[in-house]
Length: 213
Image 1: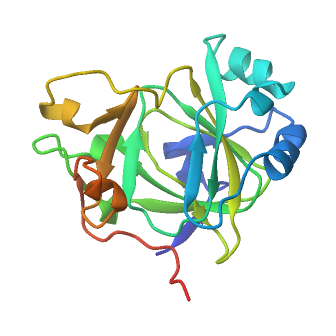
Image 2: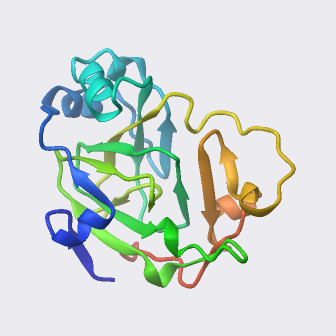
């Protein structure tokens, strides 16, 4: 599929570039002090090493207006959409390597059956060292490698508690999508997450950025 650049005006529908921060220390810590699995990806919602950096209180006070936040990471290898999720807050992402993000609009979810047509998703190239804010209206999931065989380290900043334990609810309507605290997720039927019981809400192609092998 066609890949756009976050410097294109089109990206403003999904988020903005965090040009007002110095992410040098954060990027170096991601690369040197957080794990990169041999395959797949690993997510940690709150990483003490990242939260000890000087940029953390700056992000908390400026990007979230002083609300308590968490700073963790998503590191690994991925080339397939598999799922899309959303939160009721923005998500901050800082890339230590080049990645591609597959993004959609929450407003494009069909609320009659809570499905989303993956043909509406768009791909955006994000260069290493860049920080972005993804708006709460943006559907997103794990980054994809921009280059085959090259893993990624990405820092993720969210309101404190996001992606924690899912509240106990009688799963009806949109509540069927709730997969964790402040985490609503739509899985593709071909995804591993669907096999683990996630709500199947993506229809159409399970987008793949590149073919392996």
